[in-house]
Every structure is written in C-alpha cells, then in structure tokens.
Image (tube, rainbow, N blue to C red; front, side, top):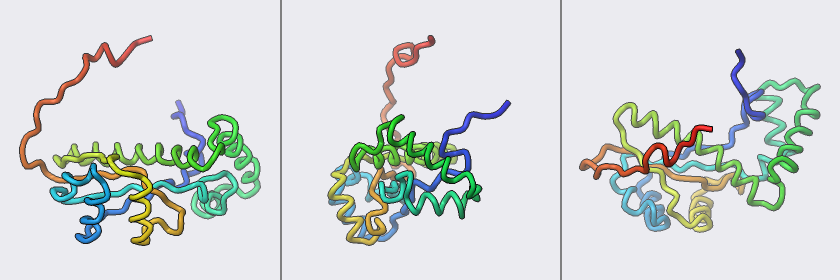
Length: 187
C-alpha cells in the first residue's frame, strides 16, 4: 500500500518556511512591544521562534526559487519540469484560486507552516517542554520590525506565526473542552 502524497511532496516540498530562533535580548524586547500576544510570554520563554513563510516572489508556479528548488534540491528531472509547473499553475490558479491578489498565495504558504508548528509543539510536549503559539500581533508592524532587522530577505518572507517554549512556572488551570461527540461526527 502506498501512502498518500500531496502535490508538493512528490519530489521534495519547496521550503516554504524558515524558523528564526530569537535569542538576542534587544530584538526580543522589540518584539515584546510590537506583539501584544508575545508581551507576557516572551519574557518567560527560554526559546522563542518566529516562523516565516515564503511570499509570492518564491511560491508562484513560475518563480526562479521554485524552479531552482525542484531542479537542484529535489533533483526533479528537467524533462518533466515544464509539465509539473503547468500542474502547479493549475493548482494555484484554478483549484485554490491562489493567484487572485498577493494575499491568497502567502496565506496558503502560512498554512503550510502550521504543520511544522504543530510538530514542534508536539515534540516539545513529548520531552516535557511547554509551548504557546502566538498569533497576537499586527502583521504589518511585525513584518516592518523583522524587515528592519534584516530577517525577511528583501520581501521573500513574511511572518506567519510565533511560538514560545519553556518550562511552566506554575501548573495551569484545568483545560475545558467541548464533549467529544460535539466536535467529531462519524459519517
């Protein structure tokens, strides 16, 4: 039995994200005051990661980055590249309407970063480290700060999400959840 594969997994997914581990205390302070969601988490976090997604400059079907990645990293056969990129174009243009403006393709790339985010948080939990995802920020202001710090590589990246890691200072209150049958329906 073969496992299912996504279109971007067939020959090695292009790297849609970069993780920036922020240890610089001055930058952490700037982030704390730019992101209301990080304000209380950042001072206590032993490790703080900003996950960046590639922008349309690199993720559009005909980008130099995508072609280079497929040919030189994934070792995609050059004789099949044109046909494959036509399929990526169809996926982006027709299937998911990702080319209707600048935002949809970047939002799609951000969704891909949440796979890595979930894996990072789950792995941390398995070794006893707590984590907290952070979306509480103004995207434009955070991108401006990260650009000023030289972290967005001339518009090739934008912020997707942040995550704080560390050991809890006190036990959290018990979690409340909706009943299982309210959130999962067997069809």
